[in-house]
Amino acid sequence: MSLAAPVLALVVAFVVTSLVLVAVGDPVGEVWKTILAVPKPRQGVNIINAASVFYISAIAVAVGFRMNLFNIGVDGQYRVAVFAAAVFAGQGWLPGWLNIIVSILIAMVAGGLWASIAAYLKVKRGVSEVISTIMLNAIATGVVSWLLLKVADRKEGSNSIETKTIPDSSQLEGFKLIPGATNRVYTLLILAVLVGLLYWFVLGKTRFGFDLRATGRSETAAVASGVKVPRMVVTAMIASGALAGLVGMPLLFGQDHNYGTTFQSGLGFAGIGIALLGRNNAVGIAFGALLWAFLDVQSNALQIQAGVAQELVNIIQGVILFAVVIAYELIRRADKRIEQSRVASELAAQRRAAPATEGAPA
Image (cartoon, rainbow, N blue to C red; front, top):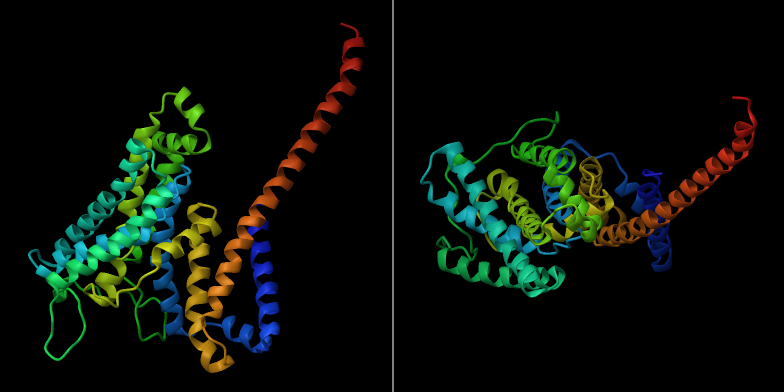
């Protein structure tokens, strides 16, 4: 039953997208042939790289979701974090890997501090985290843009605005995992794997994870069991922000080597859809991130091979998102009816057996 929801969502997305293509007169067969084609080695690397970034973003969102906290501010949190990390790493005060590790810690602190604003507003002022985090996204964009102008390393003859490039000793070449590919998989794919393992262990194997999940299911029950809900809200939101701070690290050290106006945006919002698609499960989110990355990379060829704008993939992703939410609810109701029917059958069987048991000789 748990697998039925995402499968149903994908089928619905396929049907709805095909109907849209038919309605506007685009070649349905050619579009799906292009999107579902086997990726070339270079595209395979791009899919893995994009999925690793999407995965961290989705895990950051999922931490809040597991507690019924809607941290919509991952986009702003990772933007603040990667800017802070890029400024520090660009100075080259520390050698090699030490520079990378400290920069990653700075990113986590920056992301956590930015998320703590929303946590404070919710606990102390009763402001919805949905409203505050959306507003903080806009504020983060403005603040980072302003600070970027202050610290920009302007090159003569160039209009680009970016921080100082990190030293060569802190630039990560990546792994050659796919034969025939000219590009490399991000070294900090390892970071995504560690984040997934940490998420699985903390939420599933520790008391903190139990308290977080219990609070998400019922605050009243959590309070009755001794959980301090305000403290848990603050902790979960800061933890979500700290993980959001890691989103840009594979890009910073493995690809761009600085932060500028062209640094990839929208990663936080992609994480929301992927977390929903993966049902906040560490393994499910991994499959969701791979699917999202696959669609993004395959969309690049739509304009050339099918004569269709690559924005079509946004429609597919949007339909998948809506469909998976509806599908999960339908499956949940079906599962509940099956469980109720099973319990009723067992109770009926026990009642039928009861008279025979009572009349049996001692």
